[in-house]
Length: 188
Image (cartoon, rainbow, N blue to C red):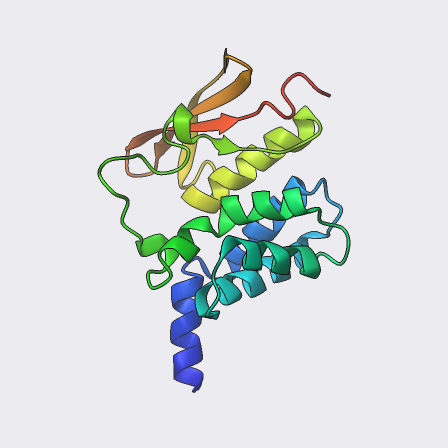
């Protein structure tokens, strides 16, 4: 039983405790810090476990669970945003751990194009920029150790505002990461 639990934990959380902690910070930021980082980390871990093991993996079920776990501090819209950002891929492909899920050749992973920009929900530039850096660290590791910023640029397209980071990974590979910053761009 213990070996099976360890195997499951390794598959669900390939980044270990750091993955859970970073996700907690990101969820807390998404919720304007109405839920403390440690409580948001527990929410992340329990929801990820539910999304992996439950017979009913529907978005409605998982969103309702997130909202219940928020004990009145998470709206249905916020729970849906948390689901979309952290759990949608896992529910769509429940048997593959998130780090091992292959991306179809027909589309780029989230964040690699403006069409699939990472949506940051924040009420101020300070919160929004912090959430961008937390997302980058959650996906690429520690800044200035595992990756560095080559360039940052803002732009608008229609009614949406974007921030694009050109980052260089420690192995020399460069990546463009796009964030939809419409919720906070220009707000202080």
